[in-house]
Image (cartoon, rainbow over all chains, first blue to last red; front, side):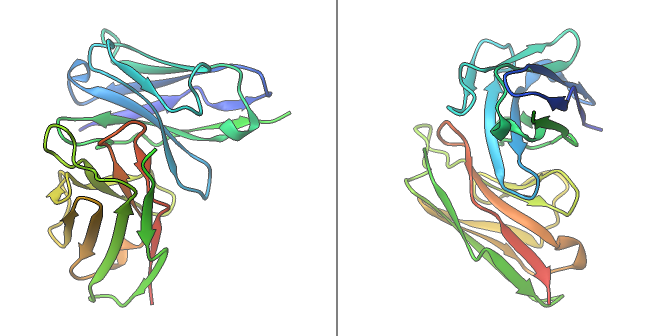
Amino acid sequence: EVQLLESGGGLEQPGGSLRLSCAASGFTFSNYAMSWLRQVPGKGLEWISVISDSGGYIKYADSVKGRFTISRDNSKNTLYLQMNSLRVDDTAVYYCAIDGSGWYAGYWGQGTLVTVSS
Amino acid sequence: DIVMTQTPLSSPVTLGQPASISCRSSQSLVHSDGNTYLGWLQQRPGQPPRLLIYKISNRFSGVPDRFGGSGAGTDFTLKISRVEAEDVGVYYCMQATQFPYTFGQGTKLEIK
């Protein structure tokens, strides 16, 4: 069974940093691209970043470019999102998801809530 | 960025009756590889989203066959042949043809 478990969320002040993790199991992690997406509670979905299976190809949404860094450790089956210079409008539930061959965001974790507030 | 526009934003449906949601993109979603990366996701209350349909009309793993997708270019439709109680939630279209991937605003499906 495919499982994705996000962690690392919490309350942080504006300008602060957080590192999110996404532990993957039930599939061959190193064979799949992975994405981070977010959702303000009660609002819509926003894709924020993708990393290829090897980590050699990365893309970001403009809203996080230069502040967030996606990475992965295939030996640990874990995806990361380093979030720096956090802003109040980064407050959201953050999800990791799997991108397959021809399909995107096929499996999602349960999400981790990030709250940025002073 | 490609803007995805869904209609309606709310859809009250009678159990056992069909439902339909439309999604229009601001530009063609045909990729240079010839595929159209348009998907549909369902988000039940309190749950993460779940992929239902990819590449316009392909049902994802475990998705019941009462869900169907159609369309081409910039206009797409998700149809539920007979709505069941477990179908209540918000439905999103998503394009992955061009970065950044973008989503529609969501359509809330509720039972009359």
